[in-house]
Image (cartoon, rainbow, N blue to C red):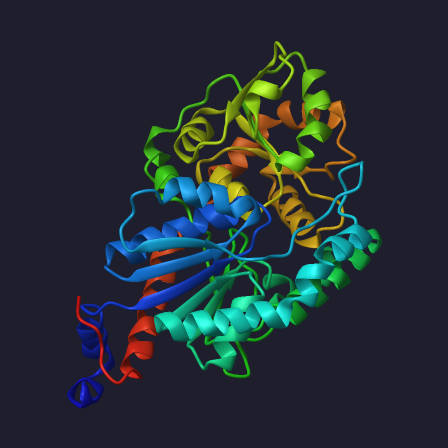
Length: 397
């Protein structure tokens, strides 16, 4: 090991990648985007021979469980997490969200204590966290090297964010900013992955380096880029809890056909203009490459994948989530789609969007997106190598 430390950094990296690292990876639980991009990183790490334990729950657990069946070197465990709560209109209800998460927040110290015990029990070398609040605290306490990965930190580190706000969005901005600052401690690197790359106010906070990369595009989507066609249907996706809000509006737009991915397609009332499908990463990617446009909630990943494949997109931010509102604003500003809060969307809004598809497509042809996955993997492998150098001896496979 002493000889290894004397070698130049690039040689040390080459030496370390032949060793196996034990990685603890935690993810936020609200929305399926965390699962999609997390899986893209996990399967690449597993292919390198590293052993990964994944911690999550909520919307993220089931798609990961299905995707990782039979995958070597990877295990999945449930972890208590924070979730949004909604009112009857489909808006984020801050009071209900606080009440529903109160027990988890109250048990935070206990959760962190259990994570610290888990780190000791398995001897983890490194940790990665995707907008999850408990593992960073445990890692800091155990002096375990870790990095954070999300798109929410652009809200507090990006320049000119305030200029994109309307007065009505200020409460949401203030709440979101406080949550990001208070609940998500930073590690050695804070990686912000976004299709609309923010200009940073600062590139370092304390000992943490802030890095902006392009969005993480799934392999299923990347492989379909040269097979994009334009069929006569619109692809639709929202969170299961918000399906009942948008379905009646889609039914009223009889001049267009929709394919909608839902939680329980067999329980949905049949409609002549809507085909319901069960969630499937591969099938969804194929329909994304074939659709004429996308109508969806305003999460980062689906927005990025639609733009990557040249598909106009109508975003429906959840009321009270500033990050999604910012995504909607960015799409409209770029001239590649439109947006309206999901509780305020009308039939006319979607029809107006669909009548302007050609105009949006023209703008999309001028946009070039670089898949950030290779940059992210380079950063992870570099940090892994540094973490392994601190071990008394690297483990050979």
